[in-house]
Image (tube, rainbow, N blue to C red; front, side):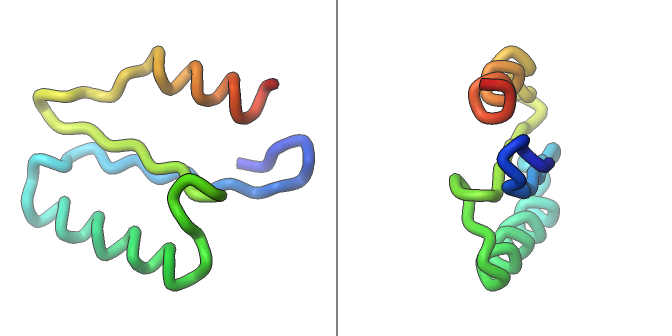
Length: 70
């Protein structure tokens, strides 16, 4: 995602965090992002969900509005 100020953001959604193997791979992927200078909360946006805690689309819309449309 590129903001109007030219900053590039990366958004990674991890959608099967209740699967142990998937969760393990997700952690490894986050560590790889960090090794390459991308840290959660800075230019890396991370979202997660499990079968019992689905993604909150209203929360996502609010985050997009505040971070990219304001």
